[in-house]
Image (cartoon, rainbow, N blue to C red; front, side, top):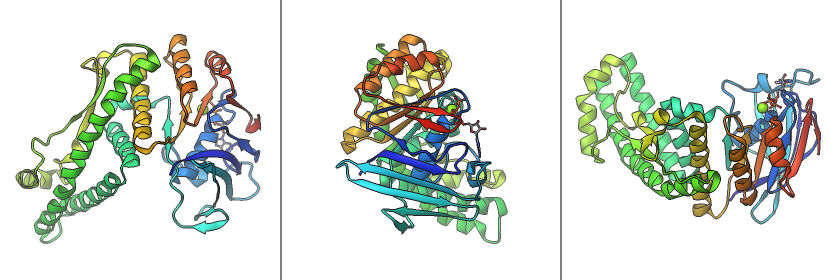
Length: 364
Ligand SMILES: Nc1ncnc2c1ncn2[C@@H]1O[C@H](COP(=O)(O)OP(=O)(O)OP(=O)(O)O)[C@@H](O)[C@H]1O
Ligand SMILES: [Mg+2]
């Protein structure tokens, strides 16, 4: 089941006024000058869909509007599924807790709204930080494959407990570490297998989206840099065993799939070493759109795509191509910009929904 956002109204969320914002099922351009609340709209949707922000170390105290009369944030929204059936989804948040309601009834588990968020800094982070690359793949693969998500959470929980033992070294900790080794390898093998299959599956879409969006004949490929030379439980157990002393000295687990990394290859060359900033951005965006195509291929539907001003570093010709590409897609996209030239390109789109944000007020 995938959803599109139809309406949103927030009270006391950052600088946003309690205006009802209407979204179209296609392209929604969120326009306005710097600091008026464009990103805050995307953030509100992100918070509703995932219970958290895309901004780091942010929660209720930062969300709460500084001029609000009550220390409480209200979200009220309507989402529509593939059959256009509306679902009303609301939330109430205060300093201690959050409450969620679907069609008026309180729920513990929130609806699974598939969302993809693209930030202007992500290309930079993707190319510079291994931790970002890992979490990128883990997030997107989890959205595509619930079994991957489950196995990953089990792997991470075993890893955390193993690390606590290695750090604190309680009595007889070596025996307990061994018990976690078994759990870790049980999940490491299928997780690595799924990662490899995913990278293989996304590959044709990468080359294709790069060509369609930026009309350039470059090959884009993402590959796994793994330290695992064999995908075999007893081999992995052995490796963990051999490393135990090293792990005890370090106080954490120094080997296994949480150390795996990814490289983006641009015509076979490491995009980080070889590409210009603009090319890195194009490669990163192509990878994301390739993911959306793969998602469609698997689910016959799309996630909601939130794009927060990505026009930096792209020349006018590339923006135009990107806008052309978005115009032809069937997914719901919310794209913000303060950039006048990018705005002009967006203005060309027939039937796009334009949302102007002025000091937190919405003009549609
Ligand atoms: N808790 C809060 N209460 C009230 N206002 C807030 C709160 N948090 C942030 N703001 C205000 O929200 C505004 C930032 O909004 P936002 O990041 O959505 O801007 P933007 O339109 O995306 O701008 P840019 O084009 O620069 O990205 C700032 O003016 C900031 O002062
Ligand atoms: Mg912004």
